[in-house]
Amino acid sequence: MRHFFGLLLGFVVAGAVLLGGGWAAQVAARAAAQELDPVQDTRILIAIGVMAVLGLLIGLILVTRVSPLAAFVPSIVLLAWTLVYVLDVSRAASLVPTGAAVQQDLAEASRGMLTLLSTGVYGMLGIALFLPVIMPSRWARRWDGEDDEEDAGWDTGD
Figure 1: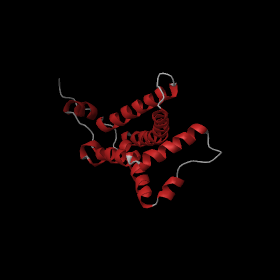
Figure 2: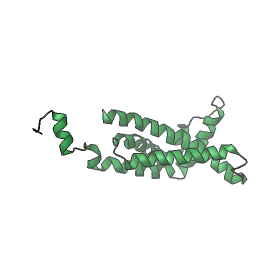
Figure 3: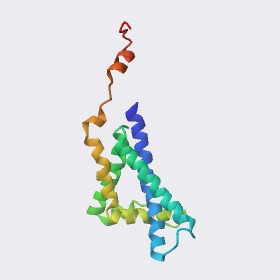
């Protein structure tokens, strides 16, 4: 059951990194280019908050004992998209939702995703998220001697 919830968490993290991180990166890049003051523009503060929450989420997945699938799913998505970008830039760019029918915030997130993809940030995050997957201790359950006896229903005579 732990791996099933880890798989679901992995899909949530992948979506958050792609959409939330893309949107926040685009807003931050626009603010830096226009030299905007974060105190004057609340969107910049929200973007910084989104980046902080994503950093916290990724950090928790890397250091806690959740299922390694929670890190595996976003790492494979990010690494696969980076590989497609290295092999064929136009095909990788075509995977991003663009066009007139796309809502403005999603279009802004799409531009941010392309920025993060082209600068190698997604490749770097993908490698960092892949490291917990190759650690055997993350796949095994933690067993304590006392809990093992209680779970098995054995009476120790105490």
